[in-house]
Image 1 (cartoon, rainbow, N blue to C red):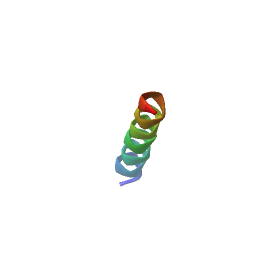
Image 2 (cartoon, rainbow, N blue to C red):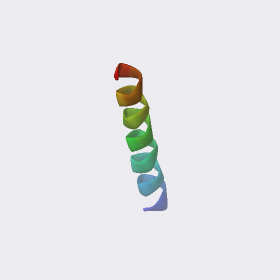
Image 3 (tube, rainbow, N blue to C red):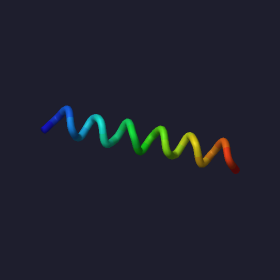
Image 4 (cartoon, rainbow, N blue to C red):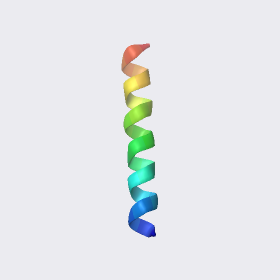
Length: 23
């Protein structure tokens, strides 16, 4: 379960980075 949560947070961070780059 912990790994799943970590993966989710990592994915969210990557998405945030992508959005910031697109801005």
